[in-house]
Image 1: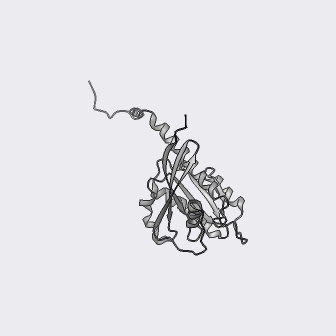
Image 2: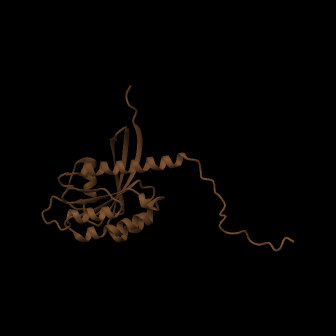
Length: 207
């Protein structure tokens, strides 16, 4: 008897400074194509790709948002309902690495996930095919460790190195969170017990 695949739709947001390669990573993952011609994303765009993760057929809807500050106000509509967030920086541009904190904070504020401490992030250090590297691997790994052990991958959107592996980790992290949420929702709603720490207000002497 053939195993039945469970279909899942995952909304993935890619964030990072302008020019770090967000659009190129999407293009390499979805269609195995890379273009040297840089074109800034205006607002937001998304691509979809189906992948098999264990017994699940996963449709990844990957949203590429503009890195320019003037488009960040568009964030709320795009961030809502996200299942995972990918933070991308350019290993040759230290400023793009330093921006990870603000992108992460911005996402948590705009998306408003129920459990921000455990929301699944994946960090990608892109452009490792270039020789003028400026951000050491250990520095990025340390940042990820400090943020609750966020998975970290170094990629080349140009060569395709580790791109598939990174996006598979994105899907797996999102699915793991989905299962945790499902399990908590299986329990009945908790019964609210009155707070007895405070004495009831006095109604005067009962004599």
